[in-house]
Image (cartoon, rainbow, N blue to C red; front, side, top):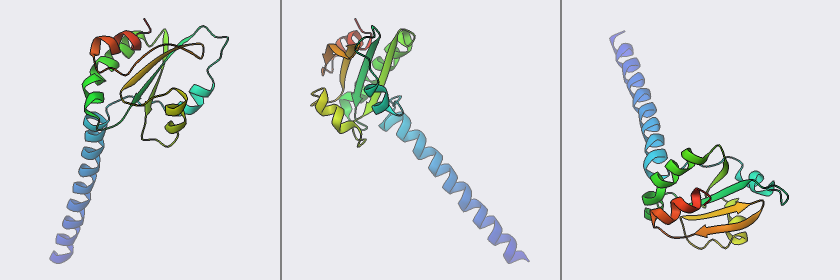
Length: 141
């Protein structure tokens, strides 16, 4: 009976360690490696942009692990939070297979790249890593 109890404790301990490792890894990826509020179904949102609409949309292209993306991340997230009621944001991880068509469509050659659209027409863009320039385009100014 004593061996069975030790075995149960060992299995339980391993399960707890595995769970904590998975949670910690996910947290690390979402806060340190990626940390961007990626848009689910971004392809659908981009494809639904209407030429007759006056709505502003900002596309934000980034890559997890990119040092320039990490540097710009807090500026981008703060600006999104400030303007999310008036501007639609589409945040795109360029490592996703769906992203390749939009990289070509919008001529994205580096990350981070921010593109402001009105209707479905480009009105401003930047591939700069200057936070002031990035904030201006993310704000749709």
